[in-house]
Length: 434
Image 1 (cartoon, helix red, strand yellow):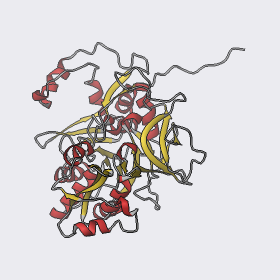
Image 2 (cartoon, one colour):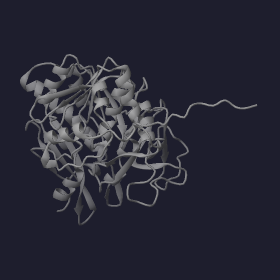
Image 3 (cartoon, helix red, strand yellow):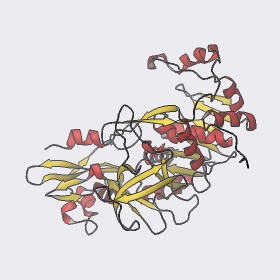
Image 4 (tube, one colour):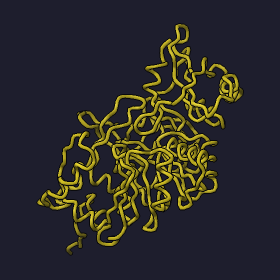
């Protein structure tokens, strides 16, 4: 008896554009330029003008310098004529809490990530959508959206370097954007623009947020002002990047819940020494992950980033509830050791950032001759209507008294990393010493 067989079909990223070009030829990719204008091209035309090549450009040459290189290059390399485990990109971690590390993506890993992202219980976009990732390409391939959109023939709207509220509002209205992704600070900027200038974004239906925690007050403010549903998620550059996502349309959604992992990725809670917790529900532990689109080894390093069983230590502290929903409770690196006891800044930040007068909040450890470290609170407020006493008073009865920060530092603008996350490395450098 001779067994049958299936065709060999390499999981390479060119397949997505080729699919869109053949079956959704008129769907567009719209790119916003530095001059405020937009460029648009259909998937079929994009496929025809996109033979593979490597282009090295000086940043000073600007985006217009790309055009003659693209038009004049010969298509002498077949698309997809390589192994699916071939590297497809290199992105570095944000460096907001430590030194950036390089993550080498492969065609296979990104292909599997795209399939996971397209599941109905994850992003679940369709050809009827116009999707706008307000995420730079260097941040985990713009969260994989440039692969996800052509995979279903969705319109892809790229906002370019500008992510201010006025620019995003114009682009959403002009291009009929229905779904968008980005960190919470991006959507705060859009809300503040519309609150100040008026106007609506009527086509926008859903926003997927990730990258940092979202206070309940901000989630409510975004949903009410924009008339959208906020879908929470959690991920990392090392995961390509999506790890978990809340159910779309879930009436019980909460900003602290990041949803469940989709098929293709698994989660594990351990103690500080990497031993699996006996109880994986309702207990805080160190979060580890593994799957087909999870990093195995960092760029330029010889040692694996995973343990002997293939689990990658995310550096996050987390809980998983009875329904399988993930809650990130903090970063192990961010914990403050004061007098030999640990303080979790994330719990303090969530409470203070939930105040309506607060735009952004961060807690860091400041050196202390007696206790080693003591927490201080740094805030960017909407106005000066709230006092330091009221800021700290919001913590009464909700955290241990010795967790309450010793000082409040008011900032005109919270420093943000290029990815939109609060830059705690800069905060520690400027405010971490007495």
